[in-house]
Amino acid sequence: MEEWCVSMPKIELHAHLNGSIRLTTLLELAKALTENQKGAVNISQVEHVIMKHDLSLTEVFQLFDLIHNVITDHNTVTRITKEVIEDFASDNVVYLELRTTPKRNDSIGMSKRSYVDAVMEGLRSVSSVDVDFIPNTQDSTSLSNLPIITNENSRKIIIVRLILSIDRRETTEAAMETVKLALEMRHLGVVGIDLSGNPKTGEWTTYLPALKFAREQGLSVTLHCGEIRNSKEIKNMLEFHPQRIGHACFFEDEHWIKLKSSKIPVEICLTSNIRTFSVASIEVHHFACLYKAKHPLVLCTDDTGVFSTRLSKEYKLAANSFGLGRWEMLELSRNAVEYIFADNGVKNDLRIFFNSVANNMEV
Ligand code: IMP
Ligand code: ZN
Image (tube, rainbow, N blue to C red; front, side, top):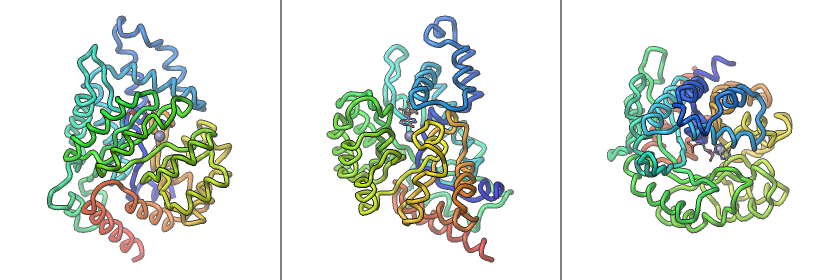
């Protein structure tokens, strides 16, 4: 089962770039800070937090602050992006929507644009696998070059698209800047907008003008929704009808009814939800109920670094906890093709690709 979870092709739709940092890289970067830079970071604290297994939601956001303190320049952003892509590809993720919050840091001459350019540079610098990240005018991807399913000897291909995140600490204007940047960079593979950040911070309505503008301009929108108990926000978010939502942990009956009738796909992050105590245990996770109801779902990692996970581990956890077999897992992965934000050319190539994998499996 474990082997199958790794080898089957997978789709990842909810992964935060900096949360997916390799922990070895994080420690290396923290230790390499100059005395000046160290001012903000206490290395022993970094080590302690990184090694801690169960982080509360509050501690998770403290860790993000540490990570952001360590990622101090464009080159580091590029390096982390490269490593994250390599890690997802080695786990046989064939399509990845990577999200990140564009950051401005005047002291080092970093603008939101230059930050995303550094991410692009990371995509370009991967050499161990083929990375398809620029939308193709011919409406097809490098996957269409694969005559049959990949085998151990064929060179790996990963399609990557970007989602730009708005952090709940930002202002309406800063959020609008991110949406405009996403529009400017569409031809470079930016496909959507995400609202994330500490759910205990800010009001999501601050970002409504930017989110509405994104939608009017044809960008897809995904919202972190129901990470804490906030009935009104959950209700209003569902009424906004984003293309997808992430988590859906603290839903009440009226929210489930609304969600199910809306058919909004849910990005499920099992380990993240358990580790942050957003769901009491895997046995009571809402995956089971949504899966049974055939609600659109996709298994995702959230933050592979912070939560020490991989997408194959999430599939294995789902298989062990909810009794899914190899075929059900492949179907789960294949269904996710319908919820991706990339264009129909990519969708078609992925459909053909998954069909060939499924056919091969039946033989
Ligand atoms: P970045 O956007 O690449 O810097 O990735 C880290 C950021 O993603 C964090 O600072 C948060 O804003 C966001 N993020 C990561 N995990 C979560 C989560 O579980 N809930 C809400 N926001 C998150
Ligand atoms: Zn998330």
